[in-house]
Length: 368
Image (tube, rainbow, N blue to C red; front, side, top):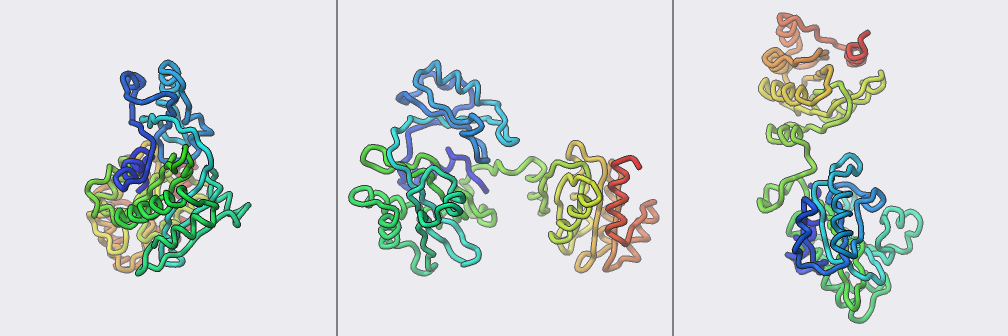
């Protein structure tokens, strides 16, 4: 679960990580009467990168200029996301820029602390072009992040004196945030020198989806579309895509391969939906209802390989909730014969070969 920058900075402030004074607005008129000192920086609040290059971050020296920028940014599209809110903050005169983050390294099975003197730059590019500028330490889960880790990282990126003391405090607070809030990633980029102190100019926080239930005070997950939220509430794995052929399968691997085979024959998948192992009649009916709601869907491909999942349950779900679009079904596995009889009685042919079924659904969409 990704947080917007303003939400991440609210968490930062909660854990005593220094951030700029600012507020969030949804229309230019809200700039009137703000107790903020100019110049101000206006930053689009979207869950994608590249805001600056897209014109979503602007500096304003006067109230009139701030309103002009707000009108230009609000409503703009950045990588498919519409800007609905702006973070308005007091601009900072930045000296040096650093990078600091804690991230879950799944290969190592532990958190890794990362720091760099090349702040303000995409850390992936730094890792490719100048790996020597990155300092990192894999953390023992029993020992955690200690002050000697922080001093070591700070020293490696060239910090000393009061700035190193600042860095140690901020790094400890960021680690505390990461572990307490069950984050997969917490990142400050840049962690900037402003005057004689360090300040978190930008903030990124990604919470582990599996731990969200433990944090009822977290904001609503704005990464998910309305249909993705509905599917999650129904216990289904659903991701919206931009095609016109809805896909339902059982098992993530099978669904992924179904997307690939449909694309191979020239089709454009509209979604990923996995009903999971042991899917019931009700699960199947819910899945059909969800995928059919997406605008632009012209056909549905149901690809079931029954193991724990019973083909007769799937067939009952299909006949109980037939989609409003053309449908192709591939059905094989547990209770296959009974499932086929149920579909046949409803006038639905079930294919055995997934490639043949995929070709058929693509041809339906193309009108062949």
